[in-house]
Amino acid sequence: ALKLNLEAVDFSFDTKSFTPKQQDQQTQEDTKHTKDDNDTGKDDKQNTTTTETQKEKEPAVEKETPKSPETPGTSVAPVKQETTKVKAEGTKISNADQKAEYVVISKAGETPSVSYKPAADAKDKTIRIPESVTVDGVTYKVTAIADNAFKGNKTVQTIVVPASVAVIGKNAFSGCKNLKSIIIGKNVKRLGANLFKNCKKLKTINVKTAKLTRKNVDKNAFMGVGNKVTVKVPKKLKKAYMKLFRKKKLSKKVKIK
Image (cartoon, rainbow, N blue to C red; front, side, top):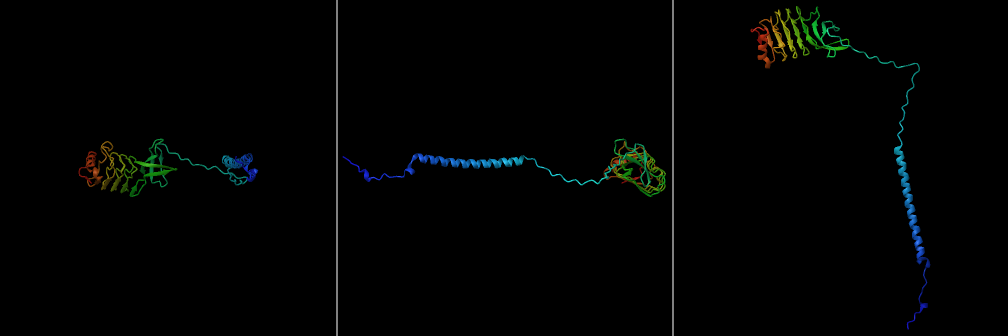
């Protein structure tokens, strides 16, 4: 038979360290503390986010610019705006120098334009017709030379027609006994009858326009031009203009360059 000597075995142990119930309680408490710490951190984060959101939603307050105090008894007078009125068609106007007479030829609503005629007492030897004239605050474009504009002028020797002019009226230079040269601008598209009749000293007609046709040049436009005159035209139109001008009574003896 086997006999155990129980007295020789040491059964002493730390009951506190090995009690399962106590270990479970300790574990639960540690878990609780950890959760509480996490919850506290989460709450702090939520509070911070809420505060930042509220700041974003709050409307920005604009600072008012301080107004300077008004001086008693003073007020700002309204600024008066000057209005300009275009003259009616057919109205005669003149600018400050009084060297020419203009007649409004534009209708209501059109670009203001006028015809040109030198003053009756004009004694300039060289006349450069202006492209525009301003009268009473309105600028009018000079687009025509009036019928009989220079007729009988005994002083003028040179006339320059600007690019703004489209029409030269009949008899415009007729009877200018001392007229020697004339330049016809590049946008002229109509020539009236008897333009150079009795211009006995005329030597040069410089035609810059390329817009002349059989329909817009009167049949007697070049009647009376002396045989000693030289007509200058655009090179590419020399042949066409030679034929056209001959039909409009230009002498065959006149040179065309």
